[in-house]
Each structure stands twice: as structure tokens, then as C-alpha cells.
Length: 444
Image 1: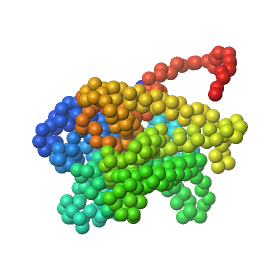
Image 2: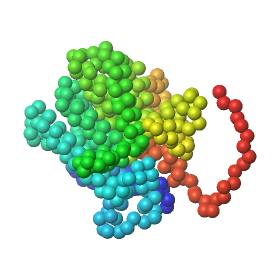
Image 3: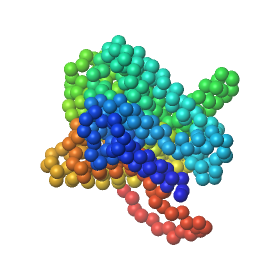
Image 4: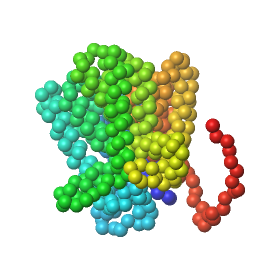
């Protein structure tokens, strides 16, 4: 198996194991167990760190059931191959050529050692989640009690960092609309989980270099990640404030409106927590959420979407062509043509899957319950494919066929369009450099 095929297979195995546990493990549910379809939907949503739910996590799952979901979220968020590579390193084995190929993404950051990165991934993850749990416990203990705050603090810290969106509260973060510290901690965890491990590792190395009074230059990759994430977050914050001021945020005071608008901007980038009811949001706000969900987080993170760097490359490519430049550049560096081609390919494949998913899901639900809610199903399909987990309240109303379609979208969105394409493509050894003759096509 090629590394992409191994990556896809690992998620399939984990989803099947998660589904089997939800079907047959005792003590998972408080009352009636989920059906086979709903159990598969829930396992896929947890492993793919999406957050869409056909069951109420707080009411329908016992503590053990919630813990089981959290394990699936944690493993799915980090990726099974990360754990496999770490086990190999821990046993003192050298990474094989096939396993070395898994670290090919480090070409953009050559100063990062693959072994060190794999160790730091788990180290940073558990450290950030531990700090987040302590902060959330401090926020919630005065309101809901020390005993009642302990487990939700752990659960939400892991779920937020993994950008999963699962919550043990009946209405996600809606009861904390006025609790700024809680929303700020959740936002910080979401951003940390969505910025990407490569960028976190670079910032850590930059900190070490400063301590040693050495020079350290951030890679173009990390610069693009930080700048694009900042622009999208601040831009989304401003637009949500305008669109929702007299809509979903109408009953809040001015400071609460601003904080919740910022939360909407952050959570739309594949996190899935909601502090407002998206059924009461404006059409403009929901469409903006769809656009932000499409971009998603950054490469090497727990987030989904086409990724911030792909979006940035498309913008830079368009800007360079408008100026008549043959090469795409950023911060005094030229970007490789094959990299921009991959970004274009990723966008086209992702857009094709999303369009097909939107129309298919809408058609299935039209035959099941009638039409008239296209935006709702479009929102649901985009949320599923980009592993966000936000919903306009129609997840539990979906037909069995719609739930199977949404499950497929969550899986495809998690493993990635390019990974799927590479996994299904058989490499031919000894392929020559043969090409056909060029012929031009008119564009525009």
C-alpha cells in the first residue's frame, strides 16, 4: 500500500472499530442504543472530528459513552499514522522508506526534523489540552460546581483543540454567551488546533533560538498560515458583527455581541461549537459561515477545509497574473509552480465533491420531507465535508439516505480530496517523460 492508501485505510479501520464499539459495548447509552446507521454516523463524526450529531451527547450517552467518543476524537484528531510512527520511534526502530515518505510535507519546512515533530505533536497536544482543561474548569466551577465542571472541562478542551465540536452541554456554548472567559478559552484552543503542528513547531523553535540568542527565520508556510488565519478571523469578525447585529445577536449587549461575533468567526473555521442558534442567523451570516467553513484550518492540523495556505496560494496566483507576472511570489520568495497547481487541483476537486454533495443531499431530503430548505442542506453538506459540525438544526431530521450521504462527505473531507485521488491512482514504475504536442485554448 502507498502512504495515501495506508492513511485512508487507517481511518476506515478506526471508523469501523468506533462503530462496532457504539453498537456492542455495554454501558454506552443512557437509554435506547443508536441504530446501526446512526452509530456509523456518530463514529464517523467523532473520528473525522466533525461534530455533527444525530444524538444528544449530554442526554443519550453515559459518562463511559462520552469518554469513548472522546477517545475516538483524540485519535482521529491526531491521526492514526502519527501514533503508529511514534510507536515505531519509541521502540527504537528507524523509519522505513515508506514511513519517511509520510513526512514529505516537511519539504516546506526543511529545518524541522520529522522524528522531533512526531514527538512534539503529542507533547504539544496533551500540554495544550491540559492547560485548556484547567482554564475551563476555573471558568465553570463557580457556575456549575466543582464536581460538575471537572468532566466537561476535559471533554471540551480535547474537543476544541481537535476542532471536533462535540459538547456535553445540550446547546453547545449557547448558555455561555455572556461568559467571555469561557468563549475566549474555547477560541484559543480552536486556533491552536487549527493552525497546524508545523507552524506550532516553528514557533517553538523560534522561541528556543531567541533564548539562545540565535537568528531564526519563519518559513513562508508559517507566514502564510498566520497572516491568512488572522485576515480571515478579523474579516469574519467584522462581517458577522454587521450581519448578525440585529439578527442572532439582537438580544445581547454591545460587548457580548462583539465577543460572540468573534466566536462565530473562529468556530466557523471547522470547530463546530456554536454560541448562537444558526436557524435564527441571517442568510448573509449563514452564507459567510459556509465560505469560512470551505477555507477551514491549516495543513498538518486537526481542522478540515481546503486549508488556509491553499486559499492564500489561489489569491496570490490571481494577483500575480493580474499584474502580468509569470511566477507567484510572497515575502520576497517565489513559490513553486507545482505547489500552486496542487492548490488549484485541491480546490477544483473539493468544489466538485461539495457541489455533488449539496445537490445529492438536497434531492434526497426533497423526496423525504419536501423542498424549500436548500440553504439548510447546503449548510449541512459544506459543514460535513469540511469537518466543521455546525448545523442549522436539520441533522436529526435527515432521512437514513441523507445520513449515509453525510457520513460519506465527512469521511471524504477528513482524508482529503488529494489523498483520495492519490490513494486510488496506481503508480506505474518506469513511466517515461512522454507528452503529447501542445495546442492552445482560448480562455476568458
